Length: 480
Ligand SMILES: C[S@@+](CC[C@H](N)C(=O)[O-])C[C@H]1O[C@@H](n2cnc3c(N)ncnc32)[C@H](O)[C@@H]1O
Image (cartoon, rainbow, N blue to C red; front, side):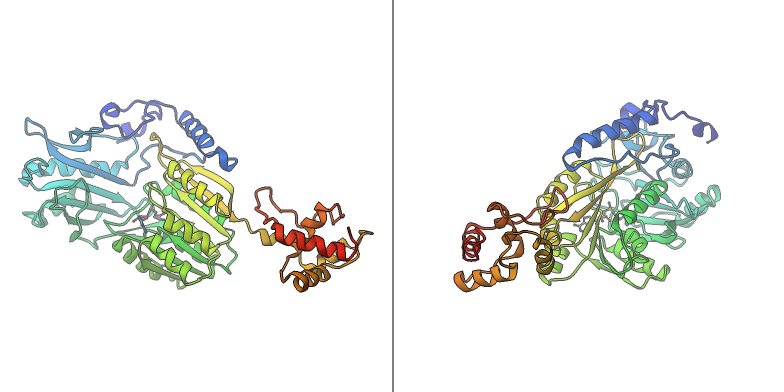
């Protein structure tokens, strides 16, 4: 173990070529960050400045989740590791520079135990055999360890003795779960979980909250960087305690629960049933009462929220790598939250979704990449978008008249012009339109009248029909 720890961050792993998991093997960590920064700057350049990426203090063994597929070589030797890139051939892996070392050594022990317990590995082609995958998850803050044995059948012979032998080598294991996956599928987990030892879940701590994590629930793989990611998301959200917040694609409720102490109410939505159950229990565990979770497709849920005319102030969204969808994005736009905090693990889909949001009334304010996946090409990013409300930039009539009163040419107030236009043309016109027409006619208006607060703001322009009516009013009052 100690030996592995001393490996330099630039060393090339002996499995690098076959495994394909670490695209940046052999590159110094600082150079990896530079490369990621350059790529993000390029990809997101149309949306503004990208902040310098937040790198890891220690880029080794950061993954709290280790997954190994099990099988046999032609000679009958048991192997466990990962599929060779683009194939279903297993690369036998003894060590990995990014995975948790305790979890790795548990997988080695299981590999060793299979023979004495006469447990056969599963053969994908023939469908014969039992053990398909092992998944180990460790709560870095709590030290709790969950081992998930994915079997092709619910029956593990001598299961109690197997667990006993495993725990003898690794007393740190807090729970062992048998997951049944009897389908011909490339999905790792099946739907059914049978608890063999312990509670069937582990707990971990993030940003001061305690989270229960079930085998089937999503949990960020790099908890150290996750705290920095969530902190950035909280800073961007600008919560004051008064807001109604949505945590979309909420998983076990982590972001929403961290936000709950700074908001009036939080609504979480998530598709995975197990994750929603964890989220509800997690709220109780942390005594958070102003949060509610819904099991639903985030897009459908948001459409229903928009149709019901609900009011929302801030939306956190953290979709999977393939990003969000139009149902979700168009409903967010309808709901008009002041701020959207987009947490993304898929830069390309992030750019796609930002394009939608920025052409539908939102402007990107800040973009912060966070490195959660050293040695790989993946980048996590937090983006703050805020609503561009043209109406926000319009002063009320009283202000306009007062400010505009310096003009010697002023003969009629804004209200008088409005009244005239309504009476003569049956049209309602806003102060914004009047000031636009006055400007066009060369009538001085206060320097900052109705100018947008930001360069990106979209200001409605006075339609021709109303422009003609306002001009008629200006003529009537001898202003032009
Ligand atoms: C990147 S994870 C983020 C989870 C959580 N925010 C976190 O930080 O741990 C994305 C989550 O979206 C969920 N998900 C995927 N598709 C979904 C959909 N259409 N509607 C709602 N949730 C979905 C997944 O189950 C997963 O929990």
